[in-house]
Image (cartoon, rainbow, N blue to C red; front, side, top):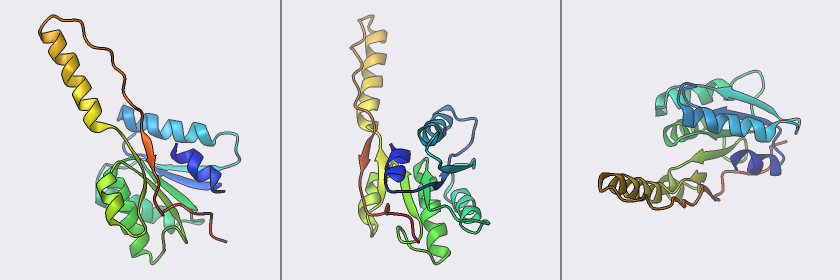
Length: 165
């Protein structure tokens, strides 16, 4: 979803702050992003980093001050998103004028920022309720209810634009 959005805006030099490679959900997000970009001619740079704001900022800074700056960054969780935002601001760059940014989760954060953060939100409350129903059904020897979760959705904000230049 994030990769398609960035590609549709014309980005062909993108980066992923993917978190640790040994976390299956983050590995899947990163792999999905890279797979969506495959065959498009886009260059994808992946940075695996611990899931902290500080580490997200360090990883984003290394991208922003590398030999070539990516035109867009996808941060694969909330903390990495905050770190990327901090790095962009500390570099004196503008979102989306200099670099576009898509985060994951943090819908509350998205509404506080100007421009509003473009983020992928997951149905966390719905997922938690479904898991609780499944556990309760097993504990009471009942058939578990069918699982029918909504998938993630894009919360469009103002942090994605066409590549600068």
